[in-house]
Image 1 (tube, rainbow, N blue to C red):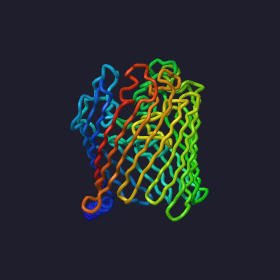
Image 2 (tube, helix red, strand yellow):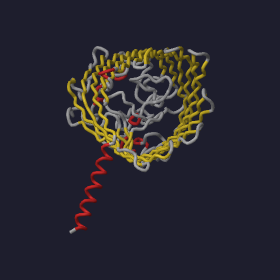
Image 3 (cartoon, rainbow, N blue to C red):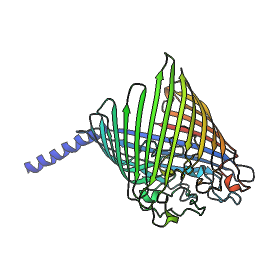
Image 4 (cartoon, rainbow, N blue to C red):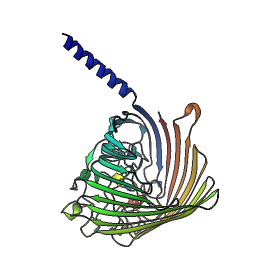
Amino acid sequence: MQRAYAAANSTDTASADLQKFLMKGKVTGHMRTYFMATDNYRPLTDYYSLAMGAGIGYKTPVYKGITAGFSGFFLFNVLSNDLGAVDPLGRGKSRYELGNFDLQDPYNRANLERLESLFIRYLKGNSTITLGRQNLLTPFINPQDGRMRPSLQDGLWLEIKEWKHLHIQSGFFYGMSPRSSVSWFTVGQSIGFYPVGVNPNGTPSGYRNSIFSRYATIFNADIHLSKALKLSYWHYHVHNVFNLHFLQKEIRQKVNKHTILIAGLQSGYQTSSGNGGNSDTSKAYMLPGHTAAFFSFRMGAAVRSHQLTLNYTHILDRDRFLFPREWGIEPFYTFMARERNEGTANTHAFTLRYENRPKKHLMYGTAFGWYELPDVLNFRQNKYGLPSYNQLNIFLNYSFKGPLHGLNLQALYVYKGLVGNTHGDLRYVFNRVMMSNYNLIINYHI
């Protein structure tokens, strides 16, 4: 009897101790509202949508270097026109607004929830190793969170930051949940979740649900050569599909108390691996023997709260540069929200970008870009039929203070003009050029 009582008492004590320990964990919350609208060239369909959602997460305190956490999010299509209808002239659906919901089911308005993170993490010194579902930030695999929810990854991620001038990161991933989805996929299944474009011979690409790839690996080394100079090397390997080497060198040289000179150089080289995803070339992500290369350059200055940069990118006259759009946005210095140059070759891009941060909680600016792409009928070097274009972005980001701390407002206006030849085919205009895109986002974090 006494032993049974002691055992029960011990169990109660352990349970109480565990409860106290877990109560010290961190609970987070996030509410997000997103209004988006696209004004297309007049014969073509316009789109609008209002999305609202909320999520909650929890992370345990650290015990002997170990912590764990999870988070989930649900959202609703509160208001929109028909995002699944095919425009008879443009022969496509909503490109931007549908991305706030579920690309697999345009008419899913309420059953939009996802377990976004579920991980265990070990910390030692300044280094960590994380296993499970997580949100990765790298040059090519990243949240790309210009919609309601980000892209996510499932796997192992290691960060080593024990040395002053050298940081190392590496990862092994076997699962992906792209932005604009509510599901998790294997690495191969996730390639082709977004529109697939055309093969180099002009036939429709057939790699959706046809890519055999078990995993993706990442390796990164950041070398801080001085206070002003940083060198970064990244290697991405996608099993049976491709390899990508990416090098970035950035300089931020202080001239005086208020002025910093900015310069950057990026370069990349890509080759196919295995059979490019499928032994049937009509269903492969890239053909065996595929090679692509690019470089991107930035120069500018930051004076007090103002920053102005001139940027240039060239994708060389080889095969088109490819990277699954489902996994992240491209890191080119000329990147502007709402468009990408992935999927092209022999491309020249120029942008001028200005931003001002007069206060810690306020940022606004504008950017203008000029993009010279191969002709839309040059299928070997233009995968998605995007004509040459110019683009104007105007953006604002404001974080509230005081009683409204945690509330953030973002606004973005985009105009894309036509420069190239569409050969009279509105498919190459629809959701691509001669259009405006409006975005208003409200976030609240607790």
